[in-house]
Image (cartoon, rainbow, N blue to C red):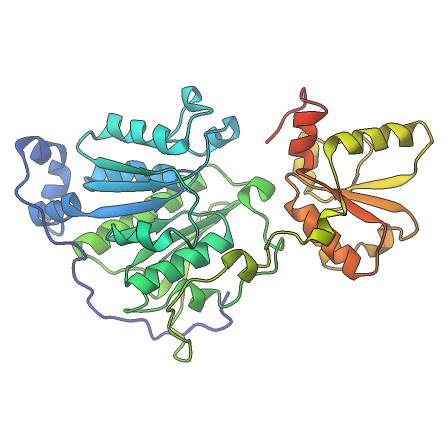
Length: 399
């Protein structure tokens, strides 16, 4: 996060983002009557919502409540970007999906839930992975972006694409019991790069799939994102532009920090390689030589049990993950302890070591750090414990 924050928050009146649509139908008047009787919204504000085109990135933890409340509020056009399918583990927090949707594309499941809530909304599906090749074209058709992505590469991509196109976006982030929400708009104030000038080291911040998330937190953060979106569309209230709202669900408290635009920052004029920027570029050929498959690891473990092979299997996940599912015979040493240099004395250099995590990303980071620290007899499990359960022990749970 940016090391310093200033009190020079922009007080510029941004005005409504969207022009109003035509008159509301009798059905719309009845449906949105509780908005219409609010003086700050009224019929004019509701017509602006009707005319608005909002793109939501991710139909997951934050996208679920955001999409439902945007639809309920009467936003006329909703775009959804997501290339994932509904998984049983999603249902703890992704309330737009149900049990019958498991296995379906999230975009289709979300579309059906929106249609059931408000059939007046035009839903556009983008069942693709957002990247530098398609972001500008996708964003161009919308007035406003809501970013509910769960990784830093996508967050920087969203920021830069929105800046290039001159569009505002609402950002939300969640982890365990903590949430953050802000509005970024380069031509009127700070951007995500002013808040986080540099990406954190790869693997240093666990994802929700690695560290967990308090399910109800998604509702609090997602609904605040929609609040900011509606305020921008209608031009009412004070935007979170220049401020970051921080929510501590465990402590039941909100606070805010202020962030200002870096006057020395160079204008954003083009997209870049965001995985490389965040240190998560694809492994090199040399690293691929230091991988083992799940079936190879199973053979190695059988040989170790028979006394024919000697090696260490090191699980670099967190303790909570280890408690859910593990590979018998693995030693738990979380990635953070290794990357911080606290656990090297627990890793012998005179024996073979195989690292593993959930899907292979964290173990690849540890592998690279170990090789840089002088370890030569190291490798990692390709695909992590997900590959192990799929190929070796399918009776075990996944998460």
